[in-house]
Amino acid sequence: MALSQGARLVAGGTALSVRSGYFMAPTVFADVAPNSSLFQKEVFGPVLSVTAFDDPIKGIELANDTDQGLAAGVFTRDIDRALWSADRLWAGQVYVNGWYVGGVETPFGGVKKSGYGREKGQEALDGYVQTRNIGIRISQPLSGSGNSVRNSST
Image (cartoon, rainbow, N blue to C red; front, side, top):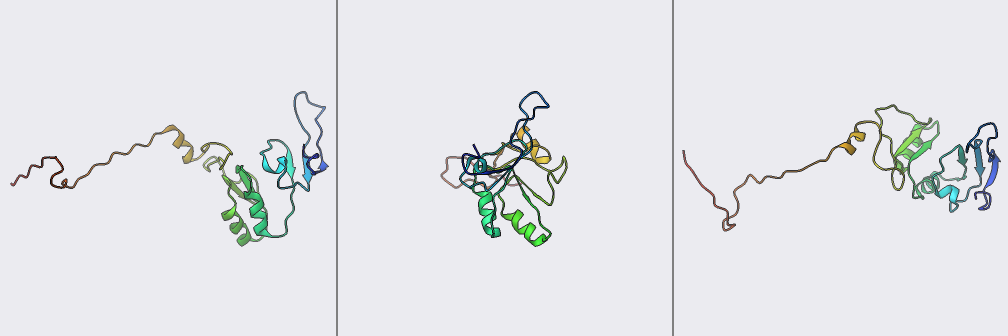
């Protein structure tokens, strides 16, 4: 489908014949159009799609312009650029200069249509609890409210 929508196959794209089942070779597509299925949908597999941009703001717009938001990555030597980008990328996880940076204590889960809730970390426990609220007025009700108030002096 990616090829029919104008993407260029750079590497892979074939089934692995050395294993039984549905296994694909690591695959790289370049020149992926922002309106293509490969750009807009989550692809779970060894697939990398490349869309070039010249302006960092355009890169953030491209990354955020999908219905998905599981993870995003920023690779740069400029820590200011890394923080600027990470703050603007709308994804459940944003990794800088690595992938899956963090441990079991860091929450994992997406935004938008990617995932539901959080795995790992303190936030994962939220799926197992129901928060309740009990509100109590401690001031005397206004007169004429139909409630009787007893005043007692000691």
